[in-house]
Image 1 (cartoon, helix red, strand yellow):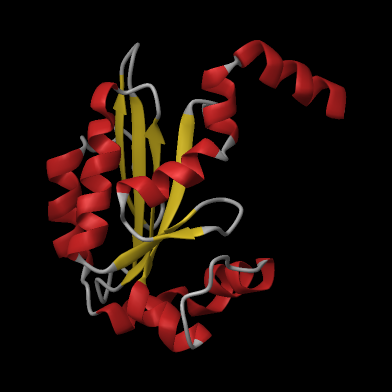
Image 2: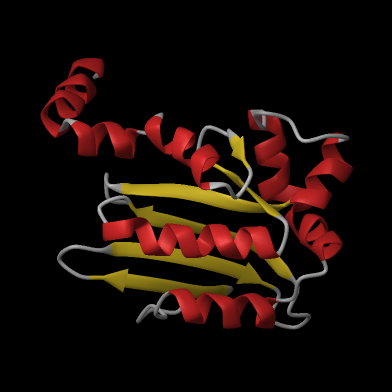
Length: 170
């Protein structure tokens, strides 16, 4: 992952409410682990959102990658100035979604890809979680707050200070 990319995992809002009883501000590590190990298929079943629908939506936002992952589809836009990608995992037999995540290039002018993903999340009632488990609605200002707290933002704001801090921690 490039330092200028910001990672977000999409989660069905209603499934999270069902599992947690409410929408927490942050997903604790054990909840994130449970999601990845056991609950992710169940979470997406409740969302009643099939992979062909998401594939069609994603194809409008970003080009398919030139590599095929084992169980899903990857998208990738890469140039000298833009590096966005996304990954959709699903059961090939049932077409049931098992996960959707993306990395937005914070250098992209107008953050077109990020905004497109937020529109998709709004349309299908999905929440977004960063690598720390912090949750956000698909609202530009809420996601913007997560971005401002990220390593990607710190790196882009002041690369030299960021790298010095990383080296000093080792």
